[in-house]
Image 1 (cartoon, rainbow, N blue to C red):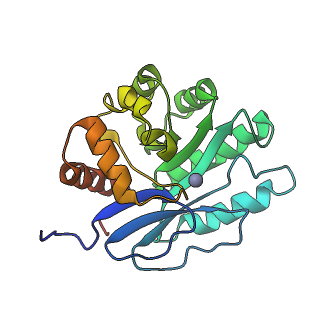
Image 2: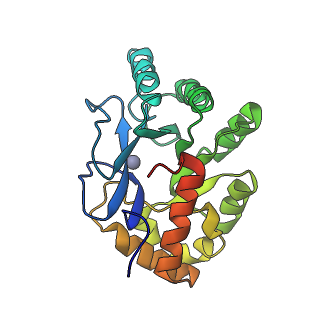
Length: 227
Ligand SMILES: [Zn+2]
């Protein structure tokens, strides 16, 4: 079938991606790594300081780097940044660094990818306090329909965790997420993004083509239509 865009599928969050025919990927740069958002066909970037990898010693250097990258045209979003109650820096430092990402997201007018593990109250509290104009996208989401609803009601987008998506128990939640609030990702997991679309399309009882088009529309609505 003839398709209008240059790329078929979009993968909203990956690590270690390489250009591939027909595929558009948002590669996530965690700024403690030695990576630069180089221009490559079919690849855009998000960049942030991950809560697992921040400490008092490196925080300003990491945030400086996020700021340096944030304005580059190939960087379409900030993050991932956020909260993790099971791993990483102490909660206060996580919050301070997260707030800095929110400010950059507002300043550069780019959406924010969020990593959140067992810290939904903190996340929602900061969302309420900062009342951002940019959209927050929960990457690696998994949870009950009630949690999804709470986040959707506040304007969040959800990008489900790939290892959860492929399990049948995700249907209960995913079937409640409107397609125009959804993204899909592989997050470095060894799976083709097309397979993720197929599984999710089944959960939602829609065609893959319809889902594919809608996720592209979601991306363009949030990140601009230059791709
Ligand atoms: Zn990731």
